Image (tube, rainbow, N blue to C red; front, side, top):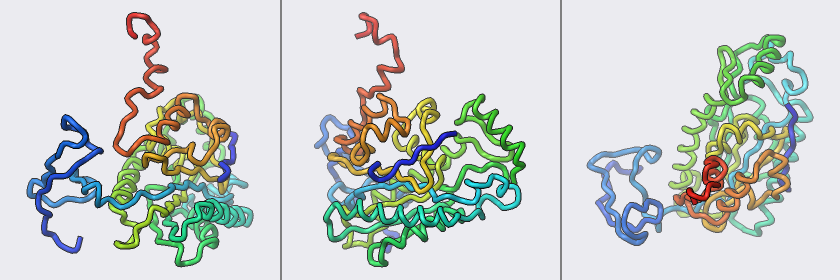
Length: 331
């Protein structure tokens, strides 16, 4: 499969809080946006990822400026597929070229952030536990002094698609050919995963990430800044599935996406309403090269101005999927 490179041009107490009345523009289940909504814990403690209770808007920490997706640098497996027959996938290293790609990627990310001209910016890293992604982060992070790194977390749900332990080279080539006939999203490798399986675990990671953002878990109290940048270092397919899950792309849209190049970057930047849009950083041409369709680009334009919690009720998918809307009787 051809790849295309996208660069950056491209609780201290278990006591429950008292019940309060808050204004919410996230959950509009009342007559007006300003109507008070009573939130109750129903006498139960819970976890932020699972609890329906929301913090008051005025107490929510600022959302990070960017979520930056990075594919690992060139690995031994990228240049010699036979490596997979004798080295476990999670233990495959970067090549020297891959290390250089990672270091250069870190420099590009820093240059992008510094263009904001903010003094209090920082980065926080999420990384796949595979050796090649950890080595990518180690080299990428050379561009940042300790005071700029808010922290890092190794996240197993960001791992590569499982292909079935040690791989037989000829069998794997045959399986990949069958995958193209069956469909890249639903085909499951023997003893391994399909992209649909990756979608399920990425859904869990996405909920954790959203909870981290809502709570400001990566920033100490009193040091919360809108100039935080989250960097996710992972694998090509995993990152494409992450984008699919975040933006609710369809299976057909996913299957038209191209892979990141090694050391490639896709930037989700906070828009004017607070949501993240690819068009805040990338050009339309770059995104078309990546595989975004007209409908996907129209949605990214909406993402630029929409607020968190809002839904695009007149999304472009409605008109392209339901073709009978073209009939005069259905207008």
